[in-house]
Image 1 (cartoon, rainbow, N blue to C red):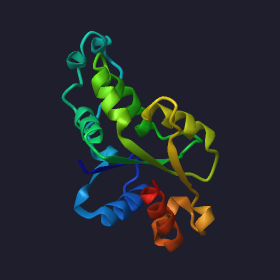
Image 2: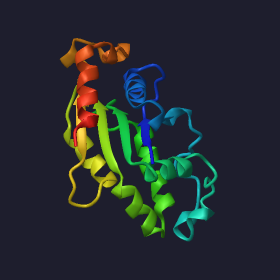
Image 3: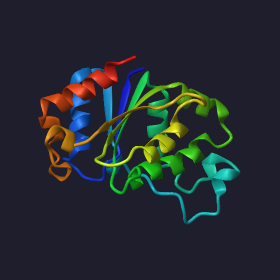
Length: 182
């Protein structure tokens, strides 16, 4: 059981990929990095809710969503790195949320296993936190508050769009302290 790092950013070479690289370097071979945008995952839609009868009936059952869910559920720790584009988690995160419902459909044992995995959420954001906290609650067991680190590029003298947040030593240290904290 290793560590799954999932970057939900739609932008290659940005702050989220920098954070993922920082974590992967920190954990070495124990970590597996998933770039959500590079995976072949079809958003929910254009179907007849076949997954409600049996998850295997989903017309997209063969895409990368199920492997990603299995990797996370088999991990000792999962780190989700999520950018804030409009005061909410990005669209890739919502695609993951919607499609994961099919993965767990009629398989409460899979959901229980997934929820039992310790998760750390790193949000790259210069704005509010409430919407993220609410969205992350679906990924932890009931009654458990999600562990979230909000990283503001401004706080470290950076501009988000440049993707240079991890060049700030203080930002790297904040990320590593956060993921090592029990």
